[in-house]
Length: 197
Ligand code: VGL
Ligand code: ZN
Image (cartoon, rainbow, N blue to C red; front, side):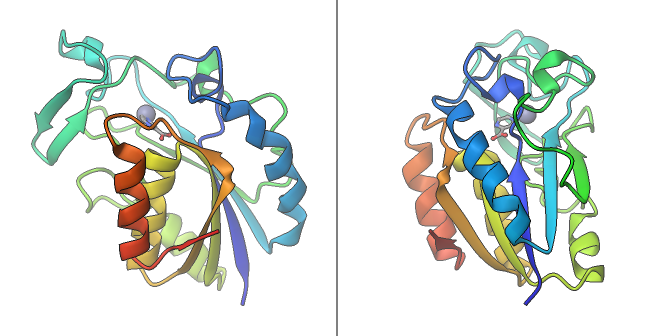
């Protein structure tokens, strides 16, 4: 059962001091590094938005954390974050990046956000990660990282729907927990057949 560790968005902007800081986001780094050697493959994801991205509140003259309607459905409007090439978009300085087999970037399409490592938020445009994992014969995924209720959640649910055996290690995740998002995410992952470890 070849297994991959999928490390979601452990980037400066999601850590304390960052533009979209997740409480305790930096506390999981050492634990994630310590698990990498147990897996057949390690994949890192990197939120990677162009300036003026459509998921930014500033692009709509709106308040951060307000909701808008996009052609593909409702979308939370975020503070500007993870802008391509910025310090905020870099991985946390202590995250071990040398063991990564693949670094996959997402959210680079100006018109569509991408929480999931597999599909953009239109739920149809693939990132290519599914093909990478399948051609390497990987069937089992363990997901860790930031944020548990957004990018980890969407990635885990999509992976389960695609037929991967998915475990989310909650001790190596931290959540934004905005407006009930964490409880909803945990329910959604359970319903999709994700194992919450
Ligand atoms: C994320 C909001 C916006 C995440 C990314 O990594 O969970 N959340 N962009
Ligand atoms: Zn983002």
